[in-house]
Length: 346
Image 1 (cartoon, helix red, strand yellow):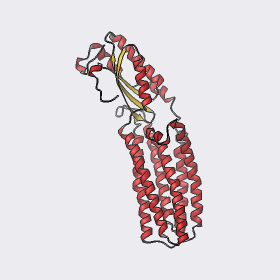
Image 2 (tube, helix red, strand yellow):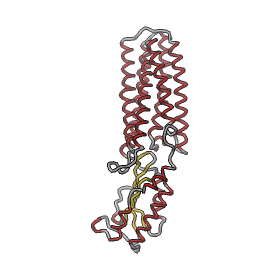
Image 3 (cartoon, one colour):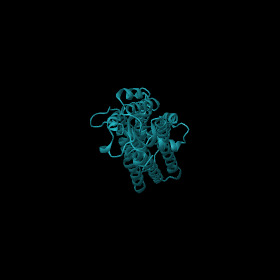
């Protein structure tokens, strides 16, 4: 039952079997969907919580900046507006990613979420960090007279409570998905950018609040308003660092990342366990969405198998893969001689 890598020379049974190596049937995808997290606002509680917190914080910060002339407070207000816009973009990306496959996008629109995640990282860098550094430089060159900082401290305290609540929600949600992996390893392996982007944003926001409070306090302690400008630049640098990390992670998802090695190993083991398979040549995967994986399998089958037996075996393997790994939305199985299979990857 072996097959050459040249489709024109493929034996009759292979020509009949390969049309069966197709995307998973709609019924299988529906079964898979029933095991996915709930959709709607409940599934997006992290994003909605962060959006509500940032909108309220942004208004309070701008009011405080207008009354006190604080550069770091104005910077923090811009930071909150950028974060609010980012949550809106991620919500839009998640909505677009849930569109079903069609003739133009046969594997669905799941990776659109990765595009908007990359846009968010660019916005944090260009708008958040850029405005913060510019405002800090402007207040160093042309410092404004100091005023009563009480309003700033009140707003910073309220902002810390709201940001802390959003951070706690994001942290708990991410903690439920990381398993036994370390934090950085879990972020690097995550295929859902919405969760770790909000976590990074909230962490940067809390760090920014601390820097803003220190900058305001130092400005009044030493009577030098330029120190507030330096604090604004420090906030911008924090945002720039976060943006670079998020851009790198989002770029990897956008280009395409394989499934978790444990998933690949499980696929290989399931296929190899069937008697009609003499060797699994390679298993190649790519995430088409955070919870959707495309898998292409090359396997060497027993030459003694007849055409009908080969068809039945492939259907059996597909059913077992879908039942065991519901995230496999599209499954392709290619009968191929081991000697002719490409060895470039597992």
